[in-house]
Image (cartoon, rainbow, N blue to C red; front, side, top):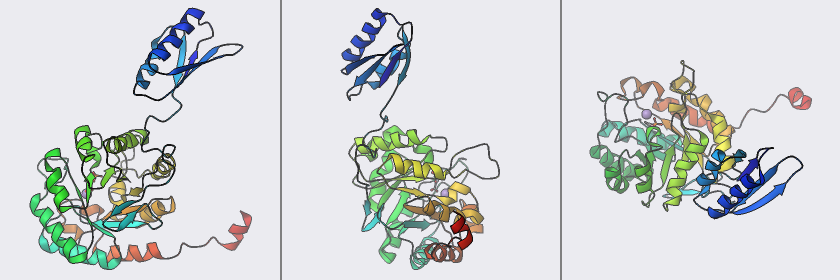
Length: 342
Ligand code: PEP
Ligand code: MN
């Protein structure tokens, strides 16, 4: 943290800041320039916010944090990238991972049919909501424990590890019993009691970015999980709220590259919630992989027009199969003249 004193700061004010920095457990490095004094606070403890409060002290012009407020998730802290192993599927390794399945588990037939189809098309994991965070209390809320049992049956039949959302602390043990990855939904990204409790589960956590969360807030939410003891965290960009009204959310792909620059955690993309439109899913998926996403989580339904949730942003089984074929095809090359011109 750097504390810049104003040009007319008195010696008394400078000494006061130095004392306060030391009182907070930091070393004060004083640099006296021609015009002003700058004080560097060196150290690492939980009292950074007290240094930030020095903005209110007389003679202080600004307090500038140097290091990121998150630590355990940062690439500065851990130089090698984290690979999250989900029952043998490696997220964050050299190959992109695809998680596919319906927004909600609706019936035995629906989830089993989808699970077999997505596995056949090359998906690595199965998704399906059992507890649904719906904007309206009158919308389908999910089948709960029955859905968890159906997901476990789908896993037994296909071998695909299961990803499903957990909305409240009281459901964690039951969900962890049936699922391989516990999803924290966008609306719960800053549900701190939930994060603290999930930090104590042995299961990997898929942490969605909140619809209005900055990248810093998203990484700080992940920090709760790591600080509490769970290092198996996968970040997921799923679109944010912007002024755009034609799309349900705005998929923030630069945030994917930024999160990977700042953190060692794997980052995947949800092109279904990220766009809200099935026609855009394949293009958004290609773009996500091109920018460095470690994988995708895509909503797939045997009959999107009959889906109980998010049908408008779900691929049908044939569309998913086609998208997977296209994703594994080599990328088009630049035209020679353009390549030469560059
Ligand atoms: C979902 O995955 O179906 C879901 C509700 O996602 P989000 O939390 O990103 O809205
Ligand atoms: Mn959904």
